[in-house]
Length: 154
Image 1 (cartoon, rainbow, N blue to C red):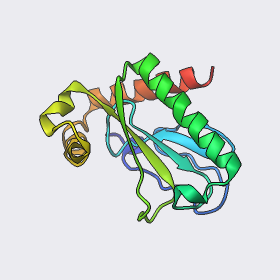
Image 2: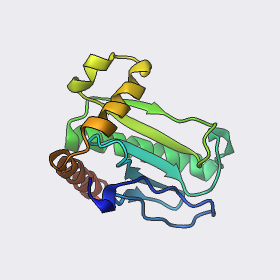
Image 3: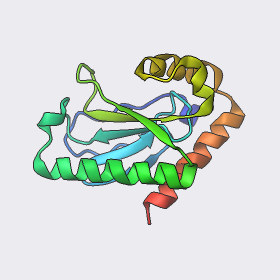
């Protein structure tokens, strides 16, 4: 991948401080921003990250909870309507050194060779990182980011 998409930039530990992750922000609210995790070049793989430095879901205040679920739903709808993504795996881990963020990992047919359960996620992500890091796929990922961004701005 080219230099501007080479690594995933961590979100600042400072509350509500804006950052520009690699690949650009797909959508942003007062409390969250969503971006493609370019370390794993899978079209439509989105990280929904809290701007406030917290680690656990139960640390969200009421406004953040509402914003989180509304934004998660809006992104999912755009993934389906614009990118044709039928299924998505969602996960987050609390033992991270980063902040609260949720992974939205689309499910594509090529992933079936790695299984069809949550256990398949690690091999899928490693495959994407090691085998899909080429110019053609990079262009497809960038195009998917642009399509999602346009749809989410409506």
